[in-house]
Length: 485
Image (cartoon, rainbow, N blue to C red; front, side, top):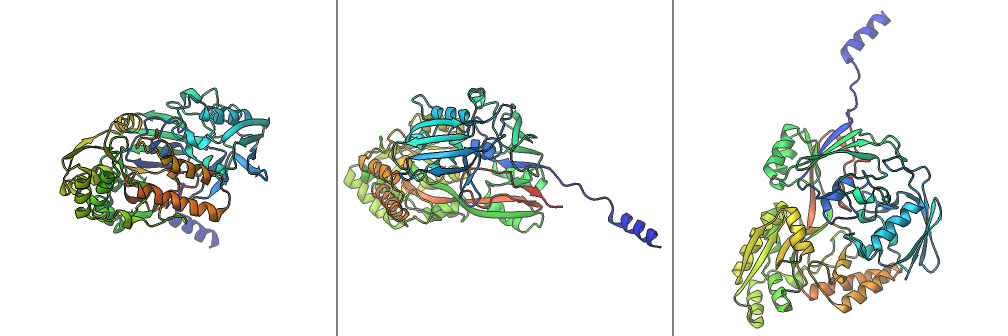
């Protein structure tokens, strides 16, 4: 009788369902290359950060700085010498050993005079990098910098090997849990689990990043099940449809993305004109019209969720009459500006609204819709623009305003000195006050028109666990992602 009952139960329950081990992730933008140490596009890190490449440290999903290739580190009493203990037994995807010599090569390359690293300033305070032994690295700084662990967690600071560094753009070789097995340009990047990974084996064995630029196509692909998750979903107006469908989960969080109407300060040198532009902008109308209500207004280049944030939105509050008066005072009553827009929906949709708002105060715009590679070449590198809209998704990156060669070309010696002081300040209370001063300074100078903090609006199959809710850096970290049965 017992044997018969067991057989019946086996028939009813059937065989155990196999755990799904592959995933297809949707992205709106395709990366121009796959080397985070040689490109500025956020889409690069969205594919490779923590998946393919790793640094000495890394950002966790809560924004904390965590050990990665360095299992621990010590800092000298004067704050100028950092000693990192590397994990033993780490290999690159080509089978070669990752050791202290690779760290020296990587950091020396990043800070060299001919470096193409988009965030070279992260390494500017490093005096020397030494391999003490194969698993120990000593970094000596020119001045104390309590932020070094944070700086080394950026995607721009991942460790690469001299044998493969020059070809990482198209054939990346990292130390992460996944290797790049295929890149069909214009369509997808495919990853596979690296069998000799030093850390915990991920639940996923394969992952595909699928590039879908059109928001309507993204919606259709999710609904059809062609995409399993779209962590930065480009059509927020359709989120209610997913919320009403039990097949999906909608994941709304925050990002490090300060979305700005960037101003070429070398072209628009009169602060009254920049102030007029800022007062012409109705942030909430842009958030409602371009982002369907998702986003938090900002008045400086700082994230509202940061404990050092200062609300400066009142300084550049929507005031079209004040904007017109400032233009009159500046003698700029017949102004036509070039507005260059990259592909993301926040830029294209937001750009149309911004153009309408500027027209109301007497500023005409000539809109150019650029593809991402064009925007990087013409605006970011060429600085050939008047206005542009972009989200700066790098974490805590107010230091870019201390770089006169950066694409909005703000050159202020007082601000540069302030950022140097911040870098040398270890006391958290003093550092907080200085960061607040920095926010006020760029707001007072109306360097850019600050729009909103980009929300992270994602959609995923409801059976998927482990996707990041917030985005402390620009990443789709798959190391903790799995399917439930």
